[in-house]
Length: 158
Image (tube, rainbow, N blue to C red; front, side):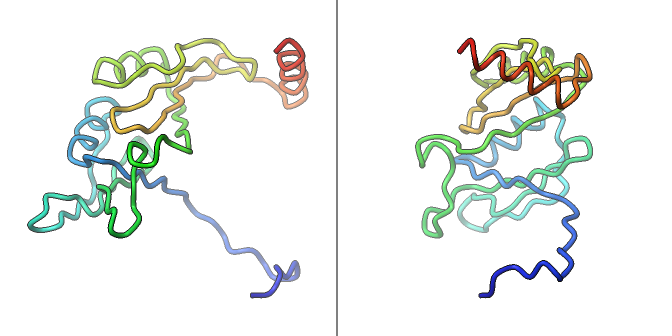
C-alpha cells in the first residue's frame, strides 16, 4: 500500500453509522425503542439461534446499527471486553428528561446532568448493555476561542 497521494481527491464520506455489539440484541432493541423512540428499519435474524445478526435503528435523523455478539467471529460487546471504548453523544432538546428516561428504563447514571464549559448541559448514562451515552442540549453558543479559554481555566484548576 502506498502513502496517501495529496493530489487525489478524498472520497466523500456521506454518513457514519455506529455499530453496537451487545450481549442481548433483542433486549437492546426494546431499550432503545423505549428510551430513545428508536424505530427498527431493518432486522436480520439468525434462524435457529435467536441471535440478531443485524438491525438498523433510526433515532431522529441518525442511524445506529446493532447486533448480538458473535464470539466465533470476534464480535464482542462491552460486557465481554470489560467496558466500552466509545461514547455515543446524542444532542437533544432536553437532556435532563432523556437521561431520567434512560435511567428509569434500566440504565445507570454515570454522570448527572450539569452545565459544561462548552455551552451544553448534559450527563452520561450507561445502558444495560454496557454502552455509554453522553446526552446533552445547547444552553449557549460558545466561540472556539472562548471554549479554549474556559478549558484552560478548567484544566488549571484540576
